[in-house]
Length: 247
Image 1 (cartoon, rainbow, N blue to C red):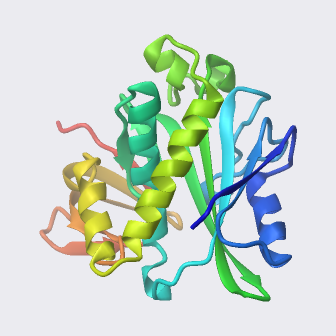
Image 2 (tube, rainbow, N blue to C red; image 1 turned 180 degrees about the vertical axis):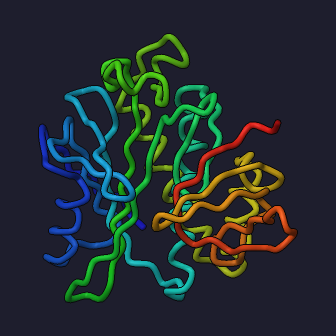
């Protein structure tokens, strides 16, 4: 994959622009970066606040050769790439909350949103990544649950440096994922970087229902295994995960 970065001063959403480009025939590796988003989106139709110059708002067009049943692993791959990029560029050690949030001290620093797009060249994936870089990225009402690189380190990061590290790590991890044995490898790499992989008490909310239990690793497609109080293993492929403190 050869990255091709396109910069914008402002967009409603980098994912929407990347999807438009994919439908128009964009090659794999086209990256959309905006200084601000006026209608940024996260998982579960949540708003992703994207004030000017305060974060990295990024989307990339992918055309995977993976079996489509393995496409959920693209989100895990992206989380590993972001983890390693932030460590390299900012010396920030993050935790990964299943499936796609990166945290520091249980506060959200980065979110990832993968969406499939039907194009004339076949089905593509648009992978969106939002990273809170500066203190300006967080309104007062979110400071209890979210954080930024600047808040963690006390240093205002250089966007270009973070972007360069992110693109480099995405290329490395994406190409690794598509090699023989790559799906098993990305699950191992994700678990090495996530305290949520094994033995974590969590609560999962999906469709109005709530499940509590202890994490017991990942399925081959990246689904989360949760052991309930009764000892049964539930396999989760969607849901909103919350860490639970032990009594």
